[in-house]
Length: 325
Image 1 (cartoon, helix red, strand yellow):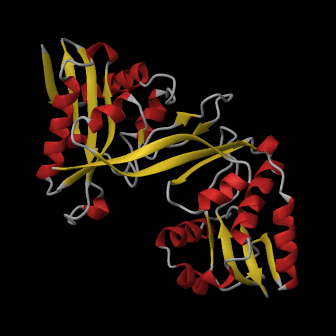
Image 2 (spheres, helix red, strand yellow):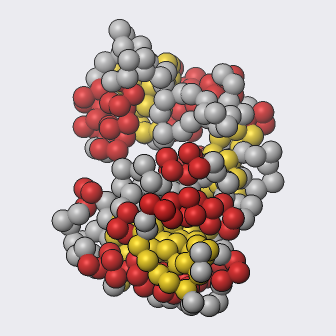
């Protein structure tokens, strides 16, 4: 007999074991500390939204649902399911269907009209890049396309509302293309340069924030600059006035080059600077110890063509999936 209950403290470690035993080779197996930091200690973790399936004393499946704090009272925003695992030995026995219905009902009880797997969930899981020497990415933005979960959700009323493609490049293979160097030469003749940010020299961030009109990028820039020792980053400047930005430059423990994104003022677009700025990030990362780069972007995001032109390859696709409840 299988019992379905809410998560209790005595089941925390069993949930961890169920995860590690059933995520296969795609997702990273984690230590208990890593798992706890990613799930139980996450700011959005909602213990009341976690349901588990127990057969005798064996935990055979679990599902984690929550509502983002900043969207709690906005009924136009969905609730989220971040994690859904069923023991391989208990597939096709109704365990997944029961767990999914419990999570959906919980989200509905919180006033939500939709439930979503994927982007903006904020809580996600690290995975390995196929056919590499343990290159990884620190989070999956949705449901792995053509996975068991993907097909299961399609068969249970979930629609694909967006797709995200993951990109990868071994940085030993990266070289700045001649096209980028030519574009930079043209821009130099107009007084436009790409250089590392220098707070004593460069100015105009407040106006830059207004020009890009993107709260997420502004928040990331401000966060880095407010650190005791801000990480280096590149800017596009004209007469020392900031016109573009890369995220912070640093190498993660795995050897991955950190990537927050790039953004350019509309005032200097159309000059190849997006490609040049991203190439600057890749070259800096390569020469400062990074082994590889990974990131993802929307299927309809024009920036994908910049990444492809610089040698990056799409190595995995993820679906953002949603259902009305």
